Length: 270
Image (cartoon, rainbow, N blue to C red):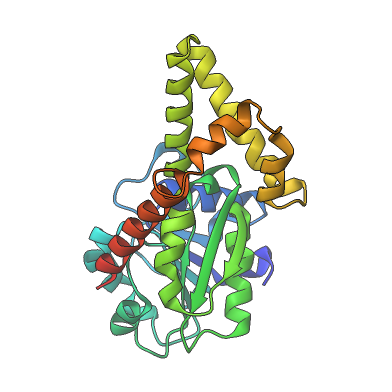
């Protein structure tokens, strides 16, 4: 479905915080007409008010897509508003963490096409990655439409089954926080070795950003890129001996961290 077709049929956005705003901005940049968008948000931002979209709870009769982007703790109150659109031709796409497809089906009906998606915060600059999976009523056309929309804020990948969403949440959903903490820790380590705080932070930020870009664009495996930087008995080798320690190094620490996040995601989904 092209943006002009979507504009004609209509799109409803339930919740327009940081993630919702990032996606809406991407869609508008791609040609989605503001007149074709209805946003339901109790506290619309000044930016949202200036976009020209419809604000309020008056739903169009049969929009092409409803995108749910509210916080999980607001779901019980917000979702019933959309019940009149369930069971028909409207596709529901949720980017809310911790809410399983079965919950949406219990409110909207099992015949409703529903896609659950997990984006991450780099979507705010168009560099996110979103994993998605649909229910039994979601067709290939529905999945392709969701991918087209979500690609406005980065890459998309499909999951084989919904249970993988907890691991996705732990790796890419929460993952940016791990990287931000790496930047903090790397800068602090630089300070400890005598660098001024501003310089240490700048070096850490650009190093992490550059290494990430190289990992995506070079075509080489991360393991080979690591080897390329590591001279035998050199400075990098000395550091990696600490970081790659099988018992106290980075790999077991990160495994524990990702497992903790995945376990918590499973708890929230119950």
